Figure 1 (cartoon, one colour):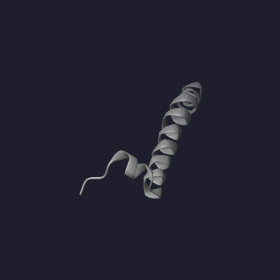
Figure 2 (cartoon, helix red, strand yellow; figure 1 turned 30 degrees about the horizontal axis):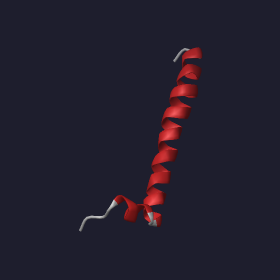
Figure 3 (cartoon, one colour; figure 1 turned 90 degrees about the vertical axis):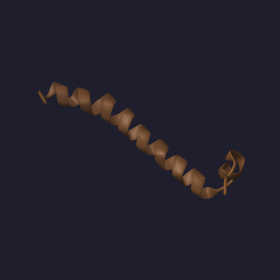
Figure 4 (tube, helix red, strand yellow; figure 1 turned 45 degrees about the vertical axis):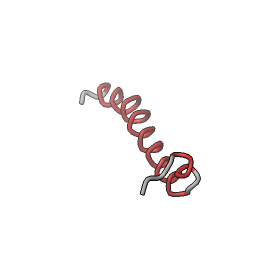
Length: 45
């Protein structure tokens, strides 16, 4: 059974999954690459 994009966007599991991917992507790219790597480099790691 195939589900269309509009039908999927009306369901709460879709938004829970999309939200978790958004949070995961933000923390990986936004926090680790932007803040942690320069901080570790400053401390000689």
